[in-house]
View 1: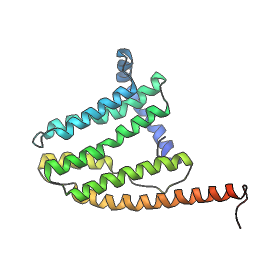
View 2 (view 1 turned 120 degrees about the vertical axis):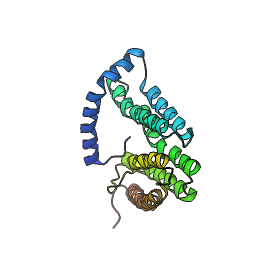
View 3 (view 1 turned 90 degrees about the vertical axis):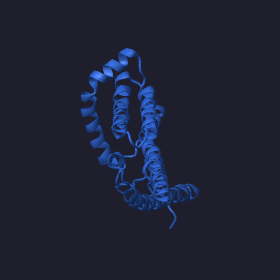
View 4 (view 1 turned 30 degrees about the horizontal axis):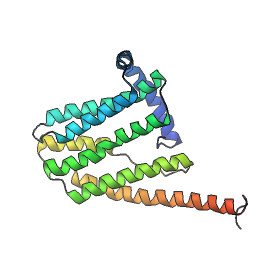
Length: 210
């Protein structure tokens, strides 16, 4: 379900082992109280929504809310593995909760410190469309070229904007909006080529066309 290529997936698995060890005491506590991975993921989204709604004059509270959001995102996976509840449905909820921060904070940036709306909308939209395509491509076995992930940098710039009462995100998000539009076009090209080849092979009985 994830959208990492082979190299990145191996690195992610190595990182997951370290993360599982670090969060082991907290995971044990959650298992003892009967918490489920999906509940932790949804709790993280609630912290995210709360952070987005907090007044711009409360940057410390927003930082605490974001910390809990990221923490929930970090422990739902280890909890699922420890509890033996790893499955595609849970992975999908985890991915949606993980990426929701880009959408909610893009909207909050417009409202709280006047980030430029078109740049933020295009950034959030292109980012989510590309991630969706990357997931789809991964399911098909279509290899995409390496791509940048800017989510956590965006989160930090959002919090910095609250502390400084200054828009630090518009130019950053505008640049990455253009980047993700380009990556989306490339992903679509590769996926279309895959389906075209698959269709050709199916209609010719498995024999590639000359």
